[in-house]
Each structure stands twice: as C-alpha cells, then as structure tokens.
Image 1: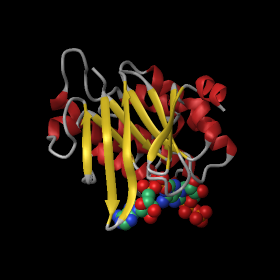
Image 2: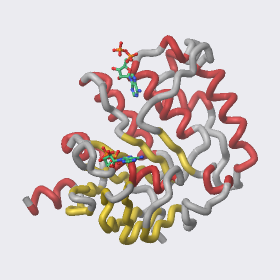
Image 3: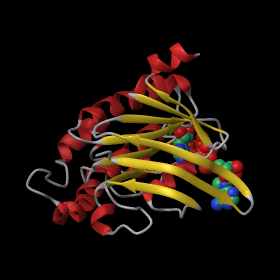
Image 4: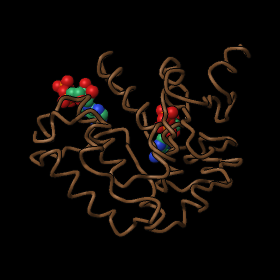
Length: 229
Ligand code: ADP
Ligand code: ADP
C-alpha cells in the first residue's frame, strides 16, 4: 500500500484555484520532491497532508488515514519541518531533544522504538558538536538541522520538509543535503520535501513531482524527466 495517496486534490482560497486536481502517491522509503515556483501551491499541498489545512475537494490518505480526521496516534507517526523555524532560545540542544523525545515513548511499538537515541539523532543531523549549546546561539543552517532533529526524534514513518534550505548559503545547503541522504537511509522513513530548486530536487529525490498550474505536470526520476525534455 502507498504511504501517501493523493487523488484529484483541489484547493481554492476564496475564488482563487490553487490546486486543480493533484494526483500522486508515495511508496514506503521513497524520497519525493514536490518542485514548483513560488506560489505554485507546494506549502498548501504539504499542509493538507500534514492535517494543518482543510482541502476543498479530493481524496487524501496518509498512513492509511484521512489527515482531516486522523488522531494523535497518527500524528505521532509524522515528522514535520515547517518553513519557518521556531526560536527555542535558552534550551540546550540535547536538553530540548530529550525533553521532546519523552512525548513519543508511549507510541513505541516492538518493531519501532520511539524516541530515537539522542546521540544517533545528533549524529544524523550533524549537531554532535553542538549538543550543549543553547538553541538560540546556533547559526541559521544549524537551527534548521535542529528543526529536522525535532521532526525525526519520534522516528516518524513520514517526514515532511517544507522548503528546508531556503536562505542557506552553499555550504549550509551541502551540509543539509548530507543530512537528507542520511535520513533516507533511516529504516522505513518516507520523505516528502518541497523546493523551487531543480538542482536540489535532482540531488535529493528518488522521484520528482513538478507542480504547475495547480496540477502535477511531470512525475518521475531525474533521469526519466530529463529524457522527456
Ligand atoms: P508555494 O508553497 O508553492 O509557494 P503556497 O501553497 O504557499 O505556494 O501558495 C499558493 C497560492 O495560494 C499563493 O498564491 C498564495 O498566495 C495563496 N495562499 C496560500 N495560503 C493562503 C491563504 N491562507 N489565504 C489565501 N491565499 C493563500
Ligand atoms: P538576519 O535576518 O539578520 O540575516 P536571521 O537570524 O534572521 O538573521 O537569519 C539568519 C539565517 O537564519 C537566515 O539566513 C536563514 O537561513 C535562517 N532564517 C531566519 N529566519 C528564518 C525563518 N523564519 N525561517 C527559516 N529560516 C530562517
């Protein structure tokens, strides 16, 4: 069964049609990039899948449930990294992750221990050396990687990354791409990320979905898409 299935998804704000019949699905462990220019409806799509926005029409299933009606147990299986980061101020990096991780312990299963081990988590996002720093003293790129750590501490089955590298310089971008490659190796995690950068989509994704005019106009691996052009 697909981890996510979106069929003929439609979304309008007042009279403005933003999504005009979006259809795609995701298989377990896939890294999908939703690629499109600013204003294409990428955030709208991802926020509907996360359960933050109510769609106008169409069918959406994530981990077998409709995000509009899903429960806390379902939400605990999602990792969400939103576009703007929160200021965690004087919380230490390790302290924050340990504290948030405790929330997920009751959602553990025999095959999927939750939360992730904090040392493993810090290594995955490249913050081992910053474990004892205050969150508010991290650089922009480090804060974003802390957001990812917060997103994956509960060992999610699905991870959403909304424009994760916006505003990054090339080095922060490279470091972040390494993090996503490590995430893709985490057992069983399916990733949906949004980007307006074709190069980023090619570097990160198993499959690219191009969103334009409110529809998915191309859907395939980077190699498949380049053959079509
Ligand atoms: P993207 O993430 O691809 O940049 P968005 O999903 O953020 O696109 O926005 C798609 C379109 O929907 C834009 O024209 C945006 O202005 C509009 N939009 C987004 N959120 C709202 C909202 N809450 N109310 C009205 N219009 C919105
Ligand atoms: P300044 O605006 O003075 O350059 P900031 O602390 O606002 O410094 O931003 C530093 C870096 O943090 C930015 O380059 C960007 O990468 C990141 N950043 C800042 N604000 C946000 C935000 N709301 N969402 C995502 N990243 C942000």
